[in-house]
Image (cartoon, rainbow, N blue to C red):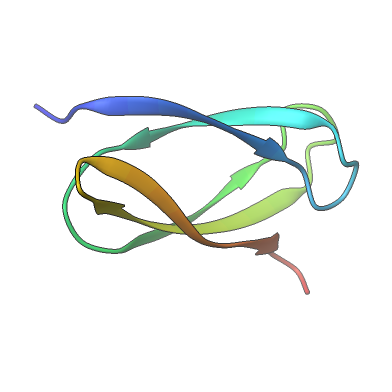
Length: 63
């Protein structure tokens, strides 16, 4: 079973404060999820360092 953590950040499209629930596995992970406000795709890349989530990249998924 994976542990999860809610992470808050600003949407790169609508600039609203939103959150994703991310799995806290070791290693780098990347996936696409839609903004809960404007429904546009966001690509997020993150890793777990010293038991904390570190956002490596957060950008518009369609360029």
